[in-house]
Image 1 (cartoon, rainbow over the protein chains, first blue to last red):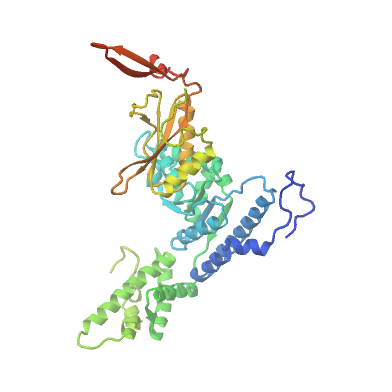
Image 2 (cartoon, rainbow over the protein chains, first blue to last red):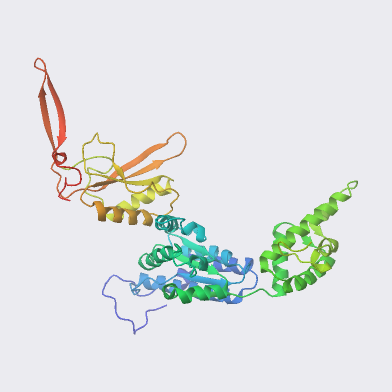
Length: 312
Length: 140
């Protein structure tokens, strides 16, 4: 609320000494963003805690700026590590919203890129390509998915290095203009940071996304169905709990993404079941309900796999 | 003599902040911003050199200002202008164009009179700067 006495007195006489924290908090309206995050993202407790911390830090930083106490612009570049389907991209989108509301990025858009968008195919192609993307991301968030592909140690003439150098330079010199978020699987990102120490030191926040528990996966499934106006019958729900338990032990399980794919296939089977009996009147309950049979027909229950390319 | 071409040219030179605001206005309208430079100040010279490609699909002026800074570093002794191109149907043309950099000294133009048949006089304007070869016109 009030300025700590230990702080050096600002030289500017016109600076503000007291700021109503609550009014400041409500003015930027991050509460609604955080509430939305809680509502729409199941689980991910460590991530949410971290985002809350960052949001508080930024709020305080904003107040310090108003009091002319902030000396440097905070480092906002982040790295999101975690297994596939743990919500890294979704959180990045929300992050852009939070940063925009707090005024740390001017536009709040997200440019989602991978190696292909940054690295060129021949000599002299990479720099303009990377710069082009950086220009597009100015005022917003640059989200680099699977960032470790930028660096290919096995090929010393790989153009990825050139792209990395430009990125590092802009991340340092134009911190006010854009926020870079790197994302990828934990172990490979770790290796990437080891071989590119420049990145690690320029990134202020490392956030690790944990895998979802089975209960959370079920909650995610129900949320997804709800959004599409479907619902599980009691039996189907039981069957889906069993489905998750089996699917989770299979290879190529990618958390929420696998759940989404499973639901897509279940909807397919439900539609097929409805269409197979043409001579009857359908109620809205009929088209909304997913029965146990729709779930149990999955290959997972007969010892097969639902992984892409799996044996039928 | 101060060259007056495009918008704002009768005003004092725009500061970088003012240029940023103008560029942001262009971007907010969905125009593609373009940087051009020349050392031939004649008003009928429409062939300015382009600095890179026109910048489509940008959201924020910071990237363009960085390009401008780079262009100034290389061609700071010449005229640099920015233009906003509106690609929407029915317009498809430049909507705004303004000078963002000019040489330290602008020698101006001389008026040449050519006496032709009878007592007729033909007039032409010629920039003093173009007496020197391209690239050396403003002490660069």
